[in-house]
Length: 400
Image (cartoon, rainbow, N blue to C red):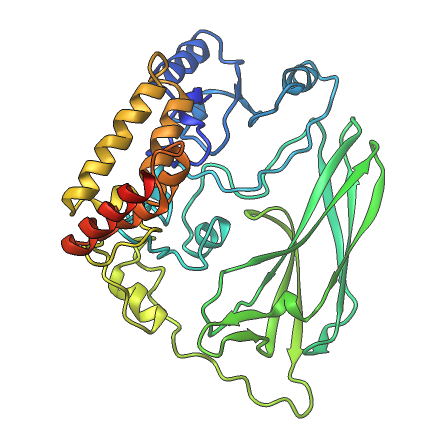
């Protein structure tokens, strides 16, 4: 799994790799014994270069105080696992749509993947994941059958009832999480290939079968049109998909959505970019600007004259005063973390101070810095020298 230094709250990881020694350990043990189970302890997806060399992987995430007992119960067969992944595991970081433009900077972050987050990207761009969203195995098996819709044609805004039968075909009692996706196969708008619209968890004994019901409203077929600034429902054929994961579609049925009487024709925004996904997730800045239909702000470091009390100290490096404050704060943090510099707590403290706004100095100065003094430093950082010096002198006089 990941060491503590890689699980620091509030910090982004620079990669998705496990420590090299952990990968080498798995490879060596799997080579000596092919019947090896890998138990993972991690707070987020990791790359698994050894995935094809082991027959079983148990994702433990960060289980907390009782996690070890739960893992032991699963490994020894006392409990039947039923968890499903609430995120997509890519094969490598480079397969992820945010790779290359996150965290971005120096001043702004551009979420160029737009709506294509997680399975919405991997399914829409047909990129093979390591493990798909909703994936999860069990010590038993489940069969899906008899997907039925309450109607085959309905008017936009009317509810739709979807039901199916799920049977435990194995020898153990177990729980299954049934997922329902909606797909608009002939959609002309900017939307994902398919979207999760509901899920149900059921507990079945061996041989037991149960009906699972989903009730879909108008929002289940809607998409958000950024051009019109509202949710829209387009008439047409939609696919209702019952699945065990986003890549394990078990049953499909179609429903035709008709326009309501008197409903005006839906205005489709022309911002739809047919080639947006063709770049393999490398959404260029030009395509992103075209999608937004407005110019992107300059992604440049803020310059003296534009600083405010909310400007992070690390963003004031273009100013002599800003660099002085950054060094002073860094020295103070170094003193506070002396003796445990390479710990998660020290790393988080350094990052918080660097990314914190200028005004946090009032809280960390322990009364040694007044609001007037901070305003004076801000004026000096903005190269308003006369104003800064006068304000600073007044602040010192007020202290006396």
